[in-house]
Length: 43
View (tube, rainbow, N blue to C red):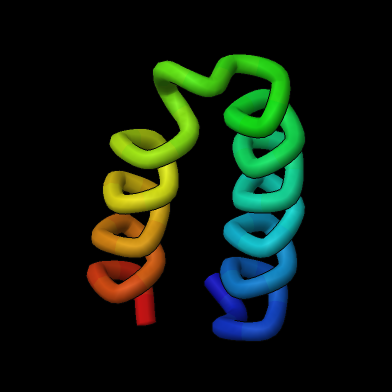
């Protein structure tokens, strides 16, 4: 796959997860760490 497409999908998924994490305070800190790890793994 094209890196631009993958990065766009990852960014979109990250934004959705970020908004979802804001609604759930318990998942916000752990969720962001997991998202950052996945983002680093992709890039």
